[in-house]
Image 1 (cartoon, one colour):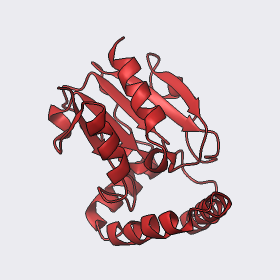
Image 2 (spheres, one colour; image 1 turned 90 degrees about the horizontal axis):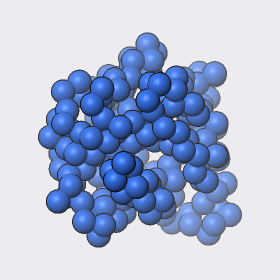
Image 3 (spheres, one colour; image 1 turned 120 degrees about the vertical axis):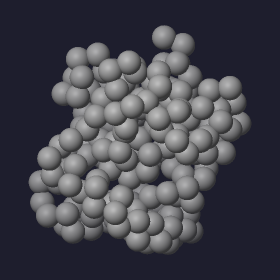
Image 4 (cartoon, helix red, strand yellow; image 1 turned 180 degrees about the horizontal axis):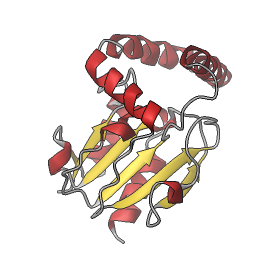
Length: 185
């Protein structure tokens, strides 16, 4: 059984990614905590700055890699929240948005991890495992993430999927399909 670790972004954690975890298990993956022992690393947003230098991963999926906001962080987050509310309102999914936002607030208190991500964002310090296939995923509705994988590594592959920045948590199947397809290569 292939193992997967999920490296969460700013104000994210297991409760935000519960649907993704469930879909990984249904697809036959085991979700583990230790990134150095995982076969697959799935890093979302600020979690892309938490990829360890020592890992046995054969695949690193980097989703919504932050490129740093053009505006201040509070302005950036307010814009993201407004886009999130708009999307969930249109999809009649405000209840899901409220639950996710509640857990985002709870995960805000992982202060040391949040600070590590913010420092890395400022210096744009992302580690790309040399022995791993690196796949960068950009969502069409995400205006603040990296689009070109070659900026990270000449061997990296880029995909663009529909959805906004947190689409992974609401719609995990396309991401799991990409994991399965890229593990076969």
